[in-house]
Length: 111
Image (cartoon, rainbow, N blue to C red; front, side, top):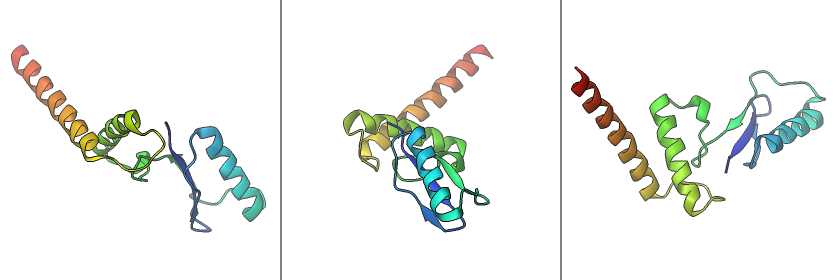
């Protein structure tokens, strides 16, 4: 399940979490129509967030990879909630470490 938010930096307001991109577009259009007369505020932000409420686009690559893995694992258990269970975060970290070790071993074997 995707989680998205719209953030208006002019009003300093953030929409509630919506489940998909289409609902995000509607939230943004409604906000702009009602509060800004249809104008687009400077530096508005809209996009997917992780289960902790962080914007994926603002995360460093390794943190974004961990967030995607932990979100996917968490969605297996409870797809409509927020937050990472400890086990999902631990498994995501293990998968990243195992992938790095496997890559290291394969490169070492080739050289």
